[in-house]
Length: 351
Image (tube, rainbow, N blue to C red; front, side):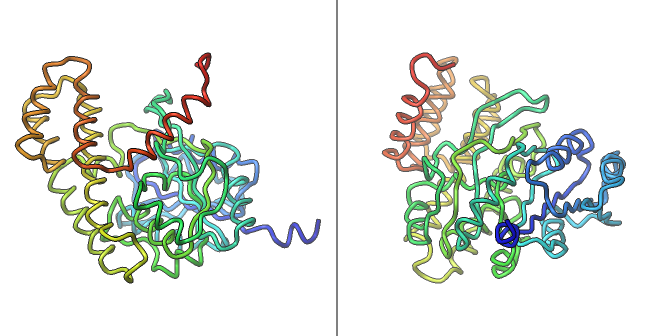
């Protein structure tokens, strides 16, 4: 028992917050309800103007492991992440958002994986997507890198990135603090993509661990930092350029050949997909124009998506299918294999 306690990681949780009074009570409550409690919880408040600070203060009362850090001036989400990283004393650190929620076993299961695979720089899992009221919208990632919990070494992780890379979800990731510090923390120039790029840079150096199980909830409420940053063509272009600068600066051979161009196609597909799903089959002419700009559409793409608008409820699926074929964000064989596996796993009588 003594050896087991000695080998247990010290767990830190850092939660940045800015005006999330509507959700932070549930988010922080979920952290406090973990079956393996965090050794320390640090809330970095970025000069909020709502009641979120009062909510955190009430929850912190009488708890030695919960600290509220109040900023007098706004520094931004990435700056808050880095301040939390600097303050954290744990061997491993999670950075859940103040508008999302962790399921009770998140820390227990991801920490166990990090202790089982000491070379893994992080462990990620799956999320349930929920709306503002908690209604289920689906699950992510679409492509799971593994169908059983395990660890992919660096070379294997790099090969995976060539086929698909949407399986790293910052909402449900536990990081090895020393590795994050070694890479310089969260890059402020990447904005909403800072955690996604950090995970990719970690993975191609030291691999990653993954649990193919839902261990958290990603709340979609219309003002998400990550989604909002890719909704306008100009901001998407800037984000892609920043990410490509980071990719091109990496030592040769870490990322798959041509990864920068592949990453751009994936980002554009993700942005166009979000807009298509948001507007459904009733996108106006201006909204359709934005979607086409997000995807950097060709004249043929423009003609196809305009035609699909007249096909009612099938228009979104047809538009997504067309853009998937044109942008090729994922390996279709891998996507098909995952779809069939999930279909058989559910069975004919599954809900």
